[in-house]
Image (cartoon, rainbow, N blue to C red):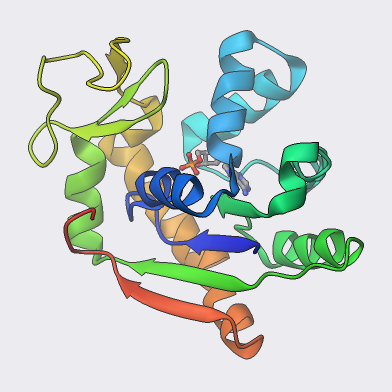
Length: 202
Ligand code: AMP
């Protein structure tokens, strides 16, 4: 099975992707996490990507599609992938179809996590992530047992610079403009599933 998770920033894609990938035995691929990791390591890709990420803009399609192509080429991707944060543009969706088709595969489901904008902004403003395993927390809705420390792996938590209010608002606008049209794309392909994302994680 190859699954795409769609939704605005803060909709819960990362949280659900981690749980679903484990449950279904799929490879979880988050382009955002890969870009952040590359930025931390200071690779050329990371430096290029960071400039866009800090402004809340999308990383250009050519860089992003090349990254995804590399990820899909891993042996672990052969059993199926759960894509979180990709595709975000029509060009990326078309590239994904072509990459999967080359292996006789297709997007089997596009799961849209539907969350109202006011809830998204509230979620983004209190988010914390583990620097080790990227598990997400929220200072109000899902606090860690020990402040600043990951319950799962004990590593320190950090806040994403692009969750700051101005950048978060820009990311939501970019989502509406560039990514929301993909709902139609997957609806037409007959694979769209809409889930109310304003519910408890489980
Ligand atoms: P995320 O962790 O999915 O919220 O992604 C964080 C940031 O990484 C985004 O705001 C973009 O700047 C960049 N990014 C992640 N995935 C993509 C993508 N598929 N296309 C373009 N930019 C992306």
